[in-house]
Length: 426
Image (cartoon, rainbow, N blue to C red; front, side):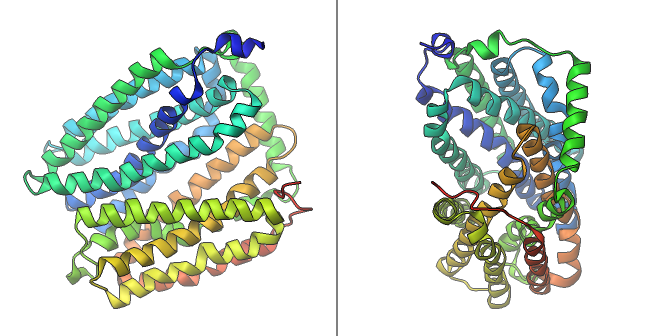
């Protein structure tokens, strides 16, 4: 029996589902619920997208501080402490959203949520590798992904729908205060639960810790080697622009689907929006990702790069249809949202697999972390001006501009060089 198994007596089923549910929910709170709150409290589209896009920054710079977490305690310690910290940050949002200075207060605590969530991501993913052997890591990778997606359904669907129901009885600020107090209680409970149930892998508890200067030296080395790799500049451009259409649509779609008819929106209620985007949309995203993974496993990344580029771009025309037709049927809206998310989930498989492809070789973990930083930056920068652009030209023309921007992902895909049949199952 290995040292790992001696140090761990808890079944992975007892902690992996809850750990990855806890990883996904704060991210959804920061990137989706913040938009919902500020939209309902009266900010303009330009203000909403500008303020909330900055909240991606902790995930952009996460690779800069993640190596230094090992200098203080264990991954297990970081998980439980960060979950308690996230509970406190949720409480801060809940308290300040009901005050006269709600904007300044909630922005501050959403920032703390973002930094806490990014740190929790690092600890949770590192603990996953320490707490399981290779066979278990492979077996539970689908389980962790499933519960991360469930957190998206809860955050994008159930919580927004719940807020809609409460809003019929309470004012907006009190409604969101109660929702975030509920999240506070959930994360305090998760922290206490994981403090009891998480295993204690020997590798996590007794590892040799490097000094801060050694970690800084190693990080600089991996940073230099990242930019020295073949097609590094092309890769960075690919990571920044391949998802440009989706990065423009993501914050605006949430506003457009709920905007009143006089503003050119579809006027969905919170309950309807929760069902359409949080359930139907996530289902399309999940299904597209599963199919994409299967196709790459069968034929390799190179074979599917162009079809996946088309899938991540062309279905955005669904929003052009919605903006011009303004259908009243929730079923028609749901179908359009499902198609767009299905294409995005399918095409995003190529994006994720290329990051793994580029990160191969020495320092692959650190190189992959840097790739995820550029991935977060690709969502942050377009969001800063998406709202202002939508306000300036209107939703109809905005979604047409999004379709024009679909040229860039094809250009980026054309520049890539993928050797062999990477991703194909042998």
